[in-house]
Figure (cartoon, one colour):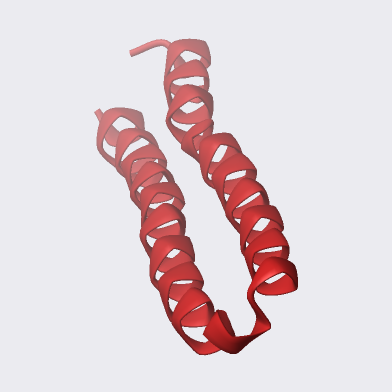
Length: 77
């Protein structure tokens, strides 16, 4: 198979990291606003923020794994 197409496919799969970065940035900003408005709820806000960031980061990791699979499996054939 053409190595250029493999590289393009892997690059597209890694684009999931862009979405994860944007979503984590937005979530952190909103959490900072929420803590500024209600400091007494900072514990609950922090818990929800960490959970949301972990789920968003998992999306980036899945994209990275798919990119590696594309390179390894299609590159070997």
